[in-house]
Length: 512
Image 1 (cartoon, rainbow, N blue to C red):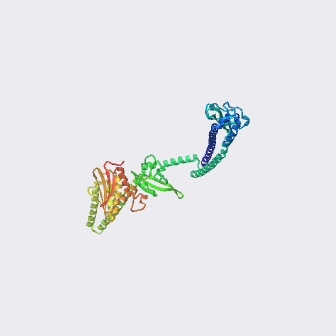
Image 2: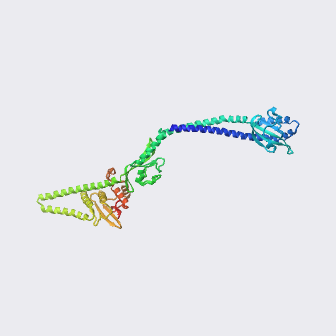
Image 3: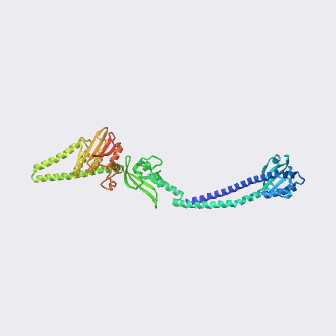
């Protein structure tokens, strides 16, 4: 392609050079003709107004008196001929002496009427530009005419003297232009990698088709336009981020995605979606070309991971509870073997009463699955030295939330609270309906979360336990709950004194 462009440029330059040279020569010829008209007019008028010219025309031998003067003026002014004549066209002077006494062959009618004019006429010396003017005596009587002229041959010589200069300038300009075109051709060859226009078009079509067919969102910013508009925004990126049609500026992106720092599989929340973002620079050698942001939709996967995490937590809690029951049964069996039957009955009755009390309290306050989860969590937390209780009158079933979402919400909030409270701490679960909204509150004796830390946990996923928890689906509990709150038009907030995380959902906002 670059070679074709170079050849086209050279051909265009040649045409422009030739046309330019012809135009300059043509303009020079016109300028020379105009100059000839002005000079011939000036010489003719100057001679006609000289008193000696009128006196000579009235003398007995006008030629003798006029010829030396016209010869001197013609040589000094560059005229090819100066003819002084009577009004009947009879010549008294001429550069060709044989023409003296003959009849002037040019136009004189306008001069006889008192005008001074110029014309191009083919006379005895060939084509020429000549001026003709009347001669008056001191009484204003027309006594003759003066004609001064320059042949076209002399004018052509003047133009020909200009042609070498014009050609030299054109050639120098052409050489410079071709050199610049060669530099551009080489640069273009490097930039296009030697591809032809058809290959570039095909490459663009494939590139465009691939970008729009990608299952991942992609946004590319050039290094020169840091704030936008983005060089590339594919369809999936517009869908995931709910971007409008047309150019996209960096300010159109969610706040958490506007930076320049590198990202690697970082979780971000955009509206009701959980996105995994990767951002890295595009470089060529040591030069930075821009930045590429890719987005993957993990909404459904993260919801399933949240549910799986709740089920896994339930299984772990039930396992711990089963282990605790095994220990208690072992104690009962040992008491019976030692013959302490009454003590064994009292111990078993006491444990049964305690467990039954928790179940009785939760049977009307929560779904059976949530009840089983809380019973297991209470036992698991007790093993870790944390007391978990459910507030009197708590209503875990009166909210606009599905059983699966209840497992995710309660399981994640209780786990976080138990971790925050630590050994010797306490956790309380409360829920209820108030002012048209249902709220789930989990309080603990821990230090609580700062607003900035809480916002980070809600927007990007966060864990204080494992550095790569987010990669494996952990540390996303608050992220999923924040997404649930946004989807239902509710809120997820954190408070201190005591440390509390509260999920508030408006009634009637059942899942879509």
